[in-house]
Image (cartoon, rainbow, N blue to C red):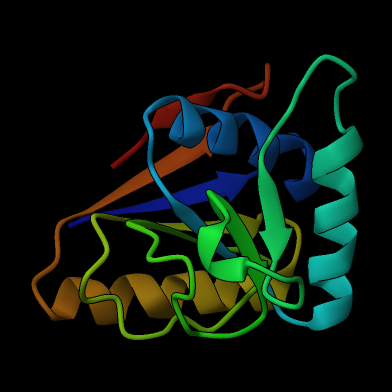
Length: 148
């Protein structure tokens, strides 16, 4: 399993997440995006329909019909209703059991102390369990650079 930590320093989550989700869809991966509340899931759901005029990201929330058929499922829960192989944890969401995922991505706001603390805690815990982790940070242009 690949475990990646994405440290947002130049853009906000709502700007950084959609391009990463597009890459997942291009690769044919099913994705679960776990956030912290139903309200936040609804905001992300609306944003993914409108973030760029020429884009189409097939997705839905776990509150909608056919959640199990969604290529990208947005949820505040820890389940895996769409049998995703990739899980994004955003907004400081607490991770579920990560077994069964091929890739897990922790995305955190570098200006939110609570999200930073949670990311550090998760890094330490997962490293202690023997997982191989990678750390990515945005450069001044908002592009991702591997730092560790």
